[in-house]
Structure formats: structure tokens, C-alpha cells
Length: 421
Ligand code: GLY
Picture 1: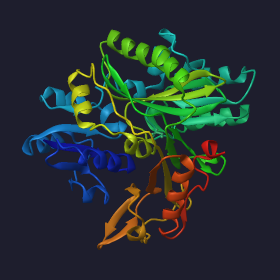
Picture 2 (picture 1 turned 180 degrees about the vertical axis):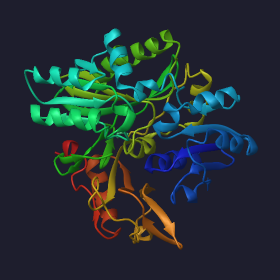
Picture 3 (picture 1 turned 120 degrees about the horizontal axis):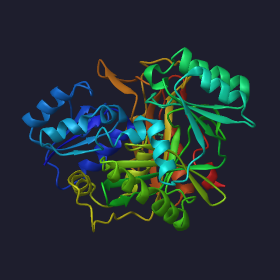
Picture 4 (picture 1 turned 90 degrees about the horizontal axis):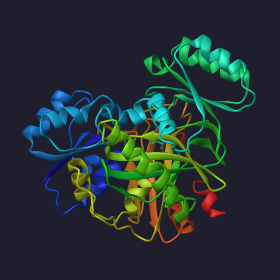
């Protein structure tokens, strides 16, 4: 069958890499893809929010399955448009994607269904938000823009002044546009984060290996938040006991709540957790695979994922089980120096041909300029190793990284530090 992956990051390169191994595949397409997917698929340049042109392309090329990488097209309703045209697509409907598209929706749903999450309040106007913050007894506090804000709409404030200026940024200066028209103020919970990915068909689900992202730019989780500087899987933090809690207290009630709302969740449900002293709280839901976690999770999956994506889209996952390799995987992200603030682009990338075959390099912010591979984004490449333990993974990844270079290349040297101790 012909399959299409939508998106252009490291996550989409990893999805294309996995799908390419499927015996069910005839031809793979990526819209728009990146220089990494170019070696696996035909990259086609169409705007991801131009659903009409994408659907025409899908029909003209007999594409039988489409997999959506990023959240924007999902929140904007691409799945509904495909469904209207009788086309198979892996991802949630617009109504179901509100789990990521609206923080207020997801917090209200968790509260109504007793799904463990931090206590919160929501505000539609700046005066009420400011009055609430004035009376807060303790800090830190978490301020979240309600809508999609390209992963930047969550601010952790350590005192009242920071909270006041965050309210102003979000609600008065409209730093995140319409996404900040509603504000969620949330209790801060200290703990370790983990990411759970579940392939869902509305009612049934298959859970992928749990992973841990490294969101901070600096070593030992210091400095600014980024889109993710690296990840590893399986995260030992999510042991069988924690996983049972997640299934019973989070995953099952969430799927049931969505069915009750008339918005059955089909697609990849990403549950962002904070775990402290055996207690689990949901930090957020995302309606798609995580990046960079996917780049560490997919190489651990032995099963062909194409039947799972098809079954999820069609509502028939029941009885299906994923086979997982008994191995560890680690992904270190190479970034342009300066990221997550401003950084230079168009820097030639050297050394990829010297990387040994046991390491996978997934492209993210790269582009060909006059046949030369150059940087084009903050997160440039993902270097991934799969090994019997994390120590071996780290050795292989950092050996490979030593062979790659571009001007002002920056990466964290301590990915996986919590499992390497
Ligand atoms: N790794 C965080 C995210 O994908 O949102």
C-alpha cells in the first residue's frame, strides 16, 4: 500500500524510517518531509494546513494510510476532512484533539473524571487572573496559555512578580496570540517527568515503551525550556506499578470520557506525566507522537506498526499486541548554538558519512542548499543508538557525535544522566 507521513521534523523522519521497514509498504510519501526522509520517501511540498490539496494528492496517488506528525493540522481538523472523503488517517478528530488544543478542556475533563492532575483555575480576563495571583500563598506556580503555542505557552513562575509579568505577556501583550485568551493557572508539582504513548482506536489501546525527554537546554536540567534536547526509552521510572496506575487512573478513564463526549479518541495519545514518590499526575495530553521521544521509542518496536495505525484508524485494535525489543535506546539532539533563543542558519553539516551504521541519525532542522546539507532550524539532528543498556547507548551516541560538526553545534553531554548514575 502507499502511505503518507505529514510533517518535517525528527519525529516524522523516525516514523518514515519505521514505516519503510513494513512489508505492507509499496510507496512512501512525506509532506513536506526533510533531507532525511528524502532517502526513504518522495518528499512533496504542500502546506500542512492546505487540507484540500493534501486530500487531492492522497486520492491521485492511491494513498491508503496517512499518519499525521504535528499537532496543528490535527487541532485544525484534518482527520475530519479525510473522514468526509472516506480516506484512512491515523490521528484524532478535531473534537478529540482538544485534549491538546485546549488546556482548559483537558483540565476540566481530568477534574470531572477524577484523573490525577494538579489543582488549577482558569481565567478569561486579566483582572481576575491578577486578583487570583495576588492571593496565592506559595510559589512556584505554572501559567499556561489555553491554546497551541508551539510548545512555548507554559511558564513556571517562582514569585509574584514573575507571575504578574507572565500574565501580561500572555493576556495583554498576546505573546501567543489567541492561544492566550484563556489562562490556566496551575499548582506546581515537583517530580520526574515521563512520556507515555498509546495507540488508541477509541476504546482499545496499545502502549509503547515509556520514555523521558530532556526539556532544558543546559546540563543537569538547567536553563531555558526547549522543544527537547534528547530522550531515552524505556524509562525505568515507569515500572509495572506506575504503568498499572496510568492505565487504570488515566488512560482508561480518558478514553471513556472522550467516548461520553461523543469524541472517541483515535490516534496516538501522549500522556505527559509527573511522578513523585509513587504518585502520578498528568501534566498534559498531546494528540500526537512526542519529539524527540519518538526517535528513541520507535527503534525499540519490533512489530510492524502499519497494521496498528490502520486498526486504530478503523476502530479495531482489540486483541492486537505490540512486540518490543528487550533493549534500550537513547537520542541526543544536536542544536544550533543559541537555541532556544536566536541562532544562525545555513551552516554546512559535515561528518554524517563517517557515522557507523549501528547509529541512526534522524534529521530535523536540515535542508539542502545547492546540494550541500546545511542547518535550517534550532534542533538540527537526532543521533540515536539502540543497545543492551543505557551505558552502551551513551557510548555509541557520543562517539558518533564526535564525527559530526557544523558551526556552533551544541548538544547536552548528559542525556540519560538519571539512568546512567
Ligand atoms: N517532547 C515534548 C513534546 O513533544 O511535546
